[in-house]
Length: 216
Image (tube, rainbow, N blue to C red; front, top):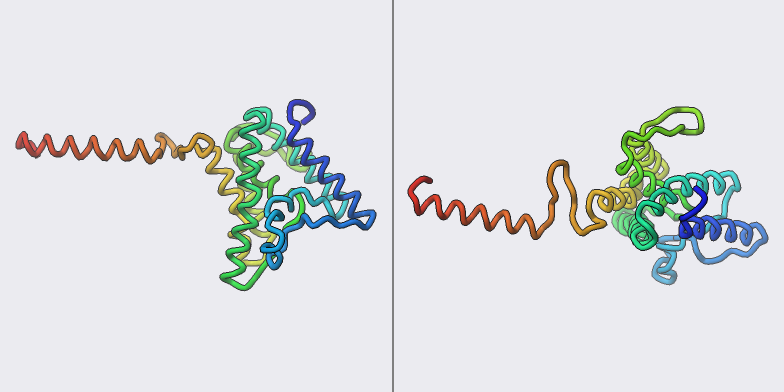
């Protein structure tokens, strides 16, 4: 984790500072609450900086975020990594807000766990065969890290809010599959809208030529 990941370290330090402030009785308006999002729209981003909570949870989430987030930052460099965080962090908050308006059930957000899950999904797509030790004991391939992260997110919220809570993981998957470059890479081909249009035009021209030649 150490070295060449200043954004990751900045997020971890911010969580440590907010934890200390909360411990001393100073609570900053950073956590996301669906009922106050209109008055505090910045909380769809800043909930990830709110380290208030059990210190064990803070330490564990900071370690895992440093592990996966730091790896992504070193691979993508600062600009692409910051863009990734700016896309994946508000996605679950906005999805939960919309789901709450539809279902009447709501959930607040605070801490690093959802950004951690998004980073884990992205990392697992980049390193599907890499092996690591889950809980420092259980050997686990990278591909299953993303699956485990999505399962944990889904079951961490009351049903059906686990579904919109996965929005950050979905955006992370999209970003790695091609969203970083403006396309979505499916297995074996790239679903670029412009390229799809060009293929359609070529196919239509080919069929037109076939009809003119009497072969179709």
